[in-house]
Image (cartoon, rainbow, N blue to C red; front, side):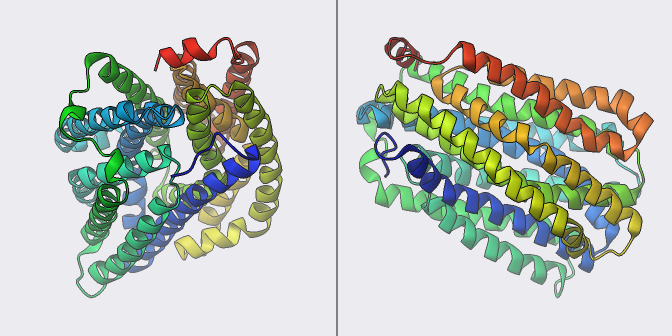
Length: 449
């Protein structure tokens, strides 16, 4: 456990964020490796199938992760206030809500998967591969939920290192199984999907066992499962706000994918590879925001409002400096990374993917502050404004599919998200400047939790 209410602010946030950054980068590196294995051992159509289904799978994972992150906000506040009885009750409530969420999502999307893929204009030539891949992944969402629940609960009490260790085990297992199931066992794209869910099972199981043994005094028992309607309401509204925030963004991405799917298979594969590079770069930005959610929540519970305001300023400056480094790296090595991921020498594929990554990275000057401010608002208990910014992102992507993509082809796709980041940062930045928390606001703000 780590107390984020004491010590040098930037040092505390960054030390807490580093394992989260490492987790995200390693996950993105795995995704790149997974794409490379699928592309090289199965072929370009299989890579396109992974890309065509990726936005749906990512939306479901984002909903689950958002929900468990939302449940962790009250947990972090109670930890900051040293109210361990309420903390245990919060964990108990989060367990029940997570179970209900998984049952609903799994059942619904197993039934709707074919219809969703057709609605997204998935090319018929990759439809059978896409259906196999998505159905296996949806069936394994329960294991993803266990891992995300444990990870976000551990982070809420200041432990960001342990989830990284279990993630590394899962990634190593996933790569090994990818190679074995796709190669010697000739399971094709189904092998890639089974490798993913089995590695999630191992990572989630190990995380759960660790929590029960290491932090047994914080785990709910007996009377702790009598959560109460008020706390259930707070957990549910915070969890749904976080879930829908990520889900709205991803719904926009799904709509955007429908525009991408109208282009040819080479462009779909190029976009898949470009997103793998993007995921690594953006992880360096958004994980600082994730750390700020816990930092703000703990300090809100402790009533340290000045510390929150200083933390926001310092982390925004840090992400701007970080963006400069990322820009240099991407312009020097981006095309090479795309080549390594795809194994392709196609100028069309390499040019399209490199263009997407370069346009994205220069607009991280908006994305970094957006992540910081959005996560700060969530930690402070503001649920509506982060949702509203997510809605702006979705609307921008809808406009792109209707206007930009038909007119500009893949360039329209590449400029869509940067436009939304700029608009969202202006909105949430203005809101933060006019609604900065004060010491007088702290008791009322905390009471809402």
